Image (cartoon, rainbow, N blue to C red; front, side, top):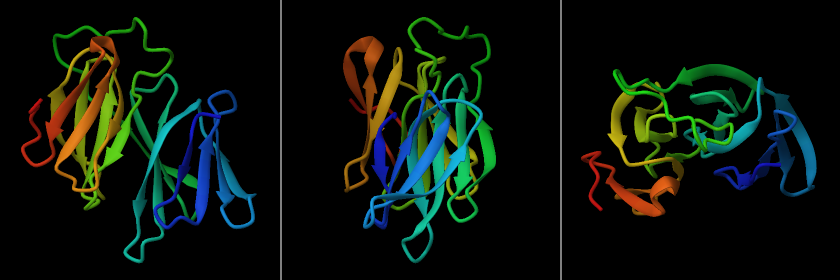
Length: 179
């Protein structure tokens, strides 16, 4: 399994298998698998969007050997979209050390309006609007951004940049590196 996440409403634990390419949704009260879905390749980081009532709308998931993310509808258990991160014109893809994961880090702002994704191929984070998944901005952050987190105040995005052994801070409003 590649990490376990809890849905926004706290009702489910969701795990992904890199080896089996399966997302498993587990009822947190009964500790039983209530549904699963098999995707085309290994399951990597995940985040969730919410319905107006706070229940889970979508699972956004990065996949092994895919430069982007897939969207799984929580109600139907089906993949409904796949978004490929943009290539950078004139820049060669960085493939050393990506460990089968050209995109490996997702975060959603607390207001639910912006999704961030990493690109290890091109050393950036990309912002997408929600719920329409339109590209807003690409922000270079350094070699191999791996994980993302946003504190509850939503002011900044923190990017673990493995190739620099550093953390880069991006302002969520201006979408610029601030530290």
